[in-house]
Amino acid sequence: MLLPLLLIGCSNTAAKTMDGSATIAPIAIPARPGSAIGGRLFAEQIADLPLDVREAAIYREIAIGNVPNFLRTFRPLTVVFTAPDGTKHNATYEVMVDYLAIGSDDDFFRIPMTPATASRLAESFGCTLPTRKIVNDVYASAQVKLEPKPLGPPRETVERFLEHHAMIEAQRELADKPLGSLVAGHKKDVVISNRLKEKPGRVAIYGWHKLDGKPIQPLYAGHVDRYVDYSHGIRLVKREMTIDGKKVDVEEVLKNPSLCGAVSDEGVIEARYP
Picture 1 (cartoon, one colour):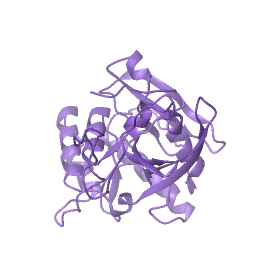
Picture 2 (cartoon, one colour):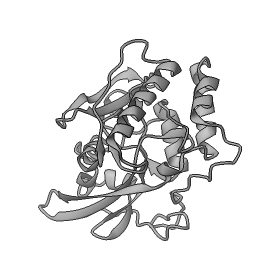
Picture 3 (cartoon, one colour):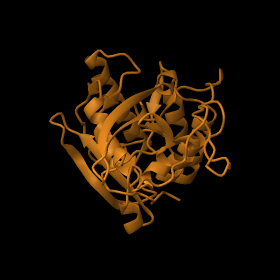
């Protein structure tokens, strides 16, 4: 028997729960201000800041809309899954085509951040973070599969973040695919997972698929949630999705034992970052 789900209404108004209370807003990344700085200059400005100050700057810059245009188009992924009762369902959800970045299409910087900052941004944009299953689905559907490029210490400096970003861009340009193509394989994803319930105060990471499709990073929640390194990426997922043509909320689907298989390979997932 299916549990009640949050049905999502028109995309230009906040979605409503069954009792009529507001829950999530439609996807809404503000337009990039004309005075917004480029990614490289932003990297230089935050290079020597303490973590909390740096995270506040990252949040502020993305929240005002200093995000490249190519990241504003989300890519739909359609999957077929089987519910515990044997019923097959079709589900479609939408993902950001690349990892969250600051700047313009001509000068952007893929920016690692703590899960708290990522979650706050996701919520403000009507999105969520991916699960392990979503990361695998993204890689399977990616138009551009990039080979991982691990770097040694130091791993947690902005200088290293920028170096890794430049390596990724060199790979992407060799692939000769336009910005806006679905890209995967170049970073580990910060994910939501039941591991967060088992290990509160940690960050869960997964992915960095090699060209043979096997991830370098298994699902792992060993780092504290203030740990950020160059390999971490934030890919947003729209909360609005469809199952069998009906609009529903990803967050509600993850709580539903009959339908969570659309977006989770861990069963029901209720753990979230603070």
